[in-house]
Image (cartoon, rainbow, N blue to C red; front, side, top):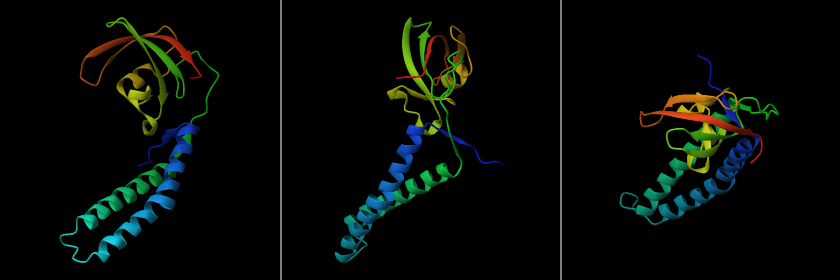
Length: 160
């Protein structure tokens, strides 16, 4: 089975690399020091500092592994000047027909999705529904709570 490609914007790639470097160069050494200090306190069976440091170590190592796996099979999304259809990196203004309100989103890969910040994944229900659709298209999809929603694409842009 082929590995799944992770789509990243250049900004998202840079953020992942910076986070990885911080985890390796700062967080990991600090955690090693915290473990040493906790061990020096003696009995590890009832040592809350040691347990906390081990939990933090697991979090750090897990995140390092996750980022390294992501960076093994990624593709940088190239921004296109073509504004005729919705593609990755585009900023899209949608009119929610049933609600009579508009919202603006950027379409990004799953790794960078932050819905509350207006960054939605191309694999999310709404993202998948509008991908490759043209300006003024009316699209229906089933939202995250199982309700059919209708949106109209009212603007496609490259910039923030």
